[in-house]
Length: 135
Length: 135
Image 1 (cartoon, one colour):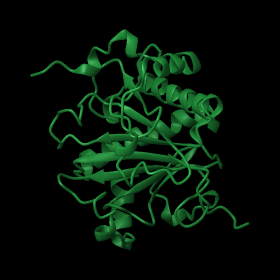
Image 2 (image 1 turned 45 degrees about the vertical axis):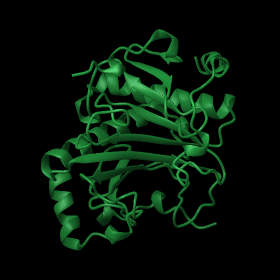
Image 3 (image 1 turned 120 degrees about the vertical axis):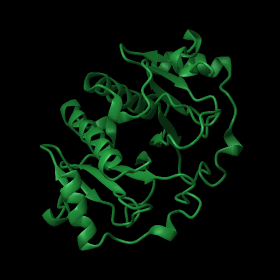
């Protein structure tokens, strides 16, 4: 079995961190500044996360949404957490739980094109900017 | 302006309630037992919800996910919270924040068919069952 990539997130990818979770850009973004909030410990679903850690995670989501709206001028955000243990683990499914924060805009094509038009990893510069603005 | 329907949820629709939120079936379900977790107070986005109420909401989501998996034998759940203030308020967008809990199954068609195949309100019997099992 491959080691879990979310159990060993490289420091340089981390935009923000708390005692219990990391914030980092999604490697397969479906819109610009698509972020992930990932608990440090490996849990599969919300039901497994101890309350204290879960509160830390939801507070971090709240904080990130606030900053994205205020500082990145994001018009909307979709929060997503897909618990689908029946999908095989792989590039598109990690068993380590993670919450997506997906910026949305008026008449964007995020779901129509499944984000294909906007995919692409962040540049070094963009990553630096996120760390400055959200960190 | 029309009054907000989520500010006055009829008692008989409520499956479960806490000090700060209600759980009820979605009126436009995209899969069976598609539920909503709705704060009692009218907030537009996560960023506006006071921590105490937000903790109560996430604990309720956790509790519901646990019960749906254990008691309704749900195989997976997608959590969704769409903050899209740029979409006009209407049948398909409420400004009163709500969290979707959408049961998922192996190779279901929820997103492919946009749920059309499975739409339809719950019967009285199904609603009673949910109140028994999740309440």
